Every structure is written in C-alpha cells, then in structure tokens.
Image 1: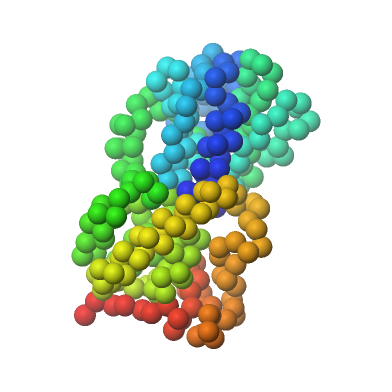
Image 2: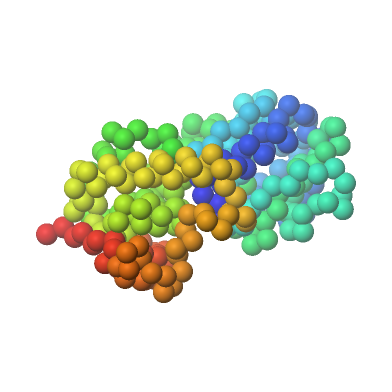
Length: 265
C-alpha cells in the first residue's frame, strides 16, 4: 500500500504531468472510487479547470485547481498514475482519465478499487472535518512527543493512527520499530523519553531516505527496507527469528527477543 514516501513520489509525477495545462475533459470508466460525486458530476466539475499546484499530507495528495478547489487523490492499496498520449498506452485498470488540452492524458489506475477520489471546496475545512493529523515528515519532535503523552495504546497503534500522525503505514511502522529494537505491542506509556526520541528520529530518517530514493511500492530494490519481514528470518546477532502477530489490527512482523516488549505497570 502506498505510504507517505510513495505518495511523495506520486506527487512529483503528478506535478510534472498535470500542472499548468487546462483540462479538456474527464472520461470516467468506473466511478466507484469517486466518493462524493457521480462520474458525470466529476467530469463536469473538472472540465475547463487547471491544476496549479499540489499538497501532500501523509498518504493524502491534494491536487489544487485555479479555482481554489482541490481534488483528493488517495491511492488506497493499489492506486497509481499513468501519463500518456496514445489510448493504447492506457493502464489496464484505469478508472478515469483526465484529458488535457495539449492531447496528453493522466489516467488513474486502481485494480482493487480501494482508492478514494473526493472533490473539495475548502481544503482547511476538509482536513479539520476528517481530523487528519500532521504530516509525519513535517511534525516537530516536540509535537510528536507531546502526542505520545501518557497513552496506553501500543506503539504500533500510535504510529498507525492517521488522526495523530499522517503518513506512516504498516510497512514503515514495522521498520521504525525494528530499527529502534522496540516490540510493536509495547505500550507508549511504558517507553522512556530516550526511546520516544529514538522512534521519532528513526521515523524521520527512514521516511526521508525513502523520499530521497523516489520510493514506489511496485518496485522496491532488493536491499530496501522491510526485506527482513519474512517468517523464519533470523534476527541480527541470531537473537530470535521473525514472529507474525496481529497488533493494532494489522499483520505485524517483529523479532521477539531482539525487540523488547515494554508494558506499563
């Protein structure tokens, strides 16, 4: 699933493909992923407008229009963008395509239809209504630590809570906790100040590296993060093997023993 770094990659792709050229028309093949408009309404709403900029907040990409409105592109599990000119180059599972006045097209590909496309009149009001947390790459250490507070939730659950912290998903959460040697079921309340700072620093470092390397969930390098997430994989220095459990509602990989479990008394 695309997480913050992958959506950053989509943002760069979108900016290069879509900004500054008026929209001639929008062809909707399947409007299931368009959440607050029908296919025809979505087409008419975009026709004649121009994308001028984009904003990313966690896993959310907001495409800004010359009218001050926005389109939310949330990629779900399998969403992707494809820029092309000839119709035979359209992606296999294209749900809609934006046709620009210069003849080029931007298709939204989504095999499993879990993406969310939303038309937005006021971005600030939308973010407030959805209670979307601060971007994980922009949040300050002070704010991050304050959010941790005295929460009794698991650290995995904390990292995944998009209303607290926007952008970290299942894969990157496991990687952060692996690198800090903390069991994902550890309670936030039980973590020491130094451990909390280590989590923040690891999160920033991992996400920044992924952004710098133009991460894409369909084509990670062989030596990329997460490669240790294989059942039976040995931990560093032989301290156990990978375990798999459901934590915070998600399938979670960790090294029991190597990643220490902390519980509040």
